[in-house]
Length: 464
Image (cartoon, rainbow, N blue to C red):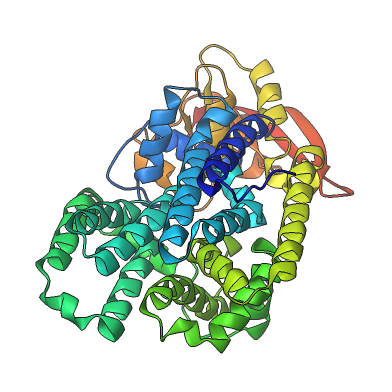
């Protein structure tokens, strides 16, 4: 059996190439999630910000549109981001330890469920993880190797990270905490202020867009995942905490948490402490937030960039060879099960992705040349635009949560056309249009035994 550690760098590149090629093929087997379609729609409306998120994901999808606008093409941004993140995890671990430990870190990263999900769905988490890994690497080089080039690159990638997702502000907190505790001398270094200046220049378009729109996106995110009242729910916290053992897998999460507590985040070692802070700060922040509101498991994803590095160091340093092997086996098993289930039992694993394409195909069979198209939610409207021929503009006129569609709407009056809904909506549509006719419906699987139904209405004579 060949020694995979003999040329760790070659093995790392081969693994990353395999992950990228395999994921690209795999992604062609799955229909788009509604959120993915929504971000794809953004790529046709490039701007400095969006109601729901920062703008980089739209620009990345815009670039991949030139390659393909099929499902796998839209997801190329995710494949690229996760692959580059894996490469820089390898490079960072080489700096902290050695080639073998670096390859272990890449094995850990490439095996866990969270990363496989990141390779599959394109969301703002993709560029966040990309620029988080780059910022962590160049932040390390800047601080510990005193590289002016690294400081400038840190400013660039930090700015792009903040243009990717607002939780990037946690990385700023990481840098500030580290400098305050370990490197106060850096407050006298002009390059630190160059980092701030470069980052500020890069985020200026997002700040300007928010200023022009009454800070609407910032206000939405401040309210998202928060509660207006101090309603502490330990059950919600335990659910979120336990979920970490699923997304980063049980063995890896248990070992990581145990040693971070036992070694006090490796406070005595500046280099390890810097990496540990990149884990502890986002984890503690979202653990706290989970006491107040329901938090999605993917929010902690950036923490596991540094976690792969620290874990690989722990396994090698404390000679936990058997634990490492068991962890890899369990992680890969769970990831393979998740990938297979997503293809074979989509209606059970992710029912929100199941059946939309079929419902839109049925709607298309009833379409006339002059029809406008409407959905009852941002995800339905976006999926219609993606899957309908020639990608026609779609809109929403029924009651649903505020979204970018509301900000884009120019026509106060709706045209005649077809309305796709997930619930019967004759009564509500009749308040908007004087003529509403149910032309078809389709029932599809949802979960194990349940079903869901899509309704197609022909609407005309707008009356509001």
